[in-house]
Length: 257
Length: 332
Image (tube, rainbow over all chains, first blue to last red; front, side):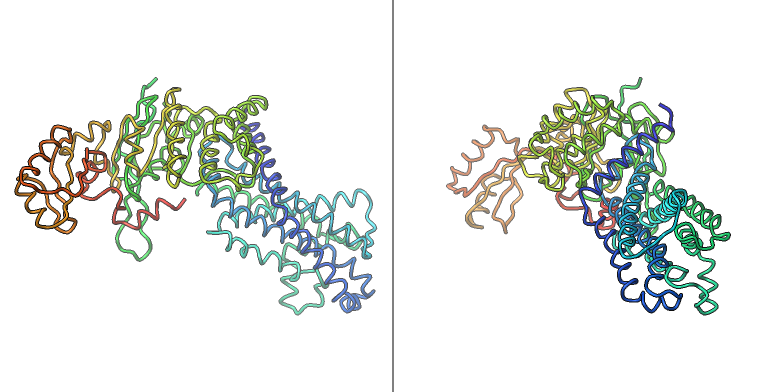
């Protein structure tokens, strides 16, 4: 077998390991799915009336506005879970065992990443389902839905590899749970919850150029038909860049340890 | 084809000193040479912090040595690490099972990672569950296993790919006596089947029981090596220990015997002796002539403990006075 097919085989073994682990330990997945749903309800029913008036259209308009931001926040929350799982895994003897075996080195990490993306897509499906039930009214075509799903998956890939690297870098699971915290805040400091033109100058400048904003704008455009402009390519470039750099970083830390 | 399963010359490893420590690098291995013939059990014996785990980590490709040539299973460690990995199995000091998976799933995971065909993997897993007495627990998560069961599963996982060289790092530490004996039985079977075993232990009895050759590691240096018998010959013979009811009797006994080391506090007298029945009888007869009553008597034949004591000036049970060492061994 060639190196590449061995790597593919080991990765699929590790993905199966990770999926089994997620099924065995469902409380983490449930928490990662429930937290964003609560945030969605909070933003729509508690803040939604007032914020909706601000953007024009009241609570009803705000449901549509806030979904992309909550989606990214859900992915970022799941990434925190991944960082903790990776850091915990590294403290277990099983990783030392993997290192003494003739297997593809990155396959352990690939298992974590794919497991986490499955978790995040599941969470996103539940979130969108509940959003639809409380008045989310996208007007996307099938192609636009697929494109939105694809972009979300790409974002999940990027943020998960970043979380894996942060998890590897952390000396213990406790600090691993803190490292990705800024990622959860970023949708707030962008166009996730309110339009950026309502912010003071310095913050607005940051909000417009940080990576989450073009991703949220693209998702919003695909699902609701708002103006995408050049956000699409910028969003894809950010995701691809973060994914590639984080992958290399994570691999390097794992090989060195 | 070399007939050595493991050979190492001039193995060195040191860790950078902690910041502001000012003591320079911490030397863990200071020029260790090893030669382990195919199909034998070799035991590396030493107290905590002697460098045993570091040695295993280097030989099993987990850690790069600072210097030294190493060959394992006929492959060069530095240039053919992946081939070495294909030939070895490692059971470390800390449980290396996936606790969220069941025993059976853990074994099947190993079979997949060893790239066995699906059917062979299932057969091998079933065989190992049977052999390690884990059939009843096969479908339960490993987190519910007792210490002894986890250790057995751990070793079973190591055996999935039929490794030619197996490293066991303190395989019985923390096990109860019954599990320990069971583990010894398994190790003996493996060697009978032609596998080479590199075992570290802090139990002298374990090395004595199992190993064909024993090396004593202390502060990163091998201080002695040989068969258990050869090592025991390095020390002056055994002794008979006599305990008396009073200091007066102890003095009288010392006069009567004319030799031995008295301990006035414990009221004991250690008399050098080969421990034979004849020697014991003569000793007791001499005390009887002077009417010296002996409260207790024990015959002490030399064991590896004595070897250690003689060579290092410390009993083996007492960890080397270097707490930093211990830390190195427990960190991953």
